[in-house]
Image (cartoon, rainbow, N blue to C red; front, side):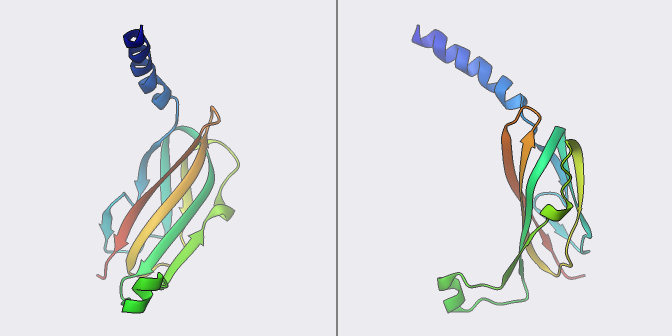
Length: 131
């Protein structure tokens, strides 16, 4: 009986995962190294989704951390919340204008809601290098 229960769970799990709307791709892509500063951020989902929150965290790579900054996590990083650009409608693609960026490492964190009401979240990062 236990084997049948486990088998049912294993069969149903992929169906539940497909019911959500994960991020299909982003621009900039996760892990990309860019030579030009992007002006916008593209988030594309597999099915209609409502964005709840998008934030951009970055650190200028020209700034060198001192020993004490590393200890106390007081590095010179920036955070921008891009919520003012988020539509309240369900959509598959979202284009958000980025604030002025410079050379450095950036991480985008997003939170969304699928049409079935499940909350989704994820993140990706990219690097901007000097030309």
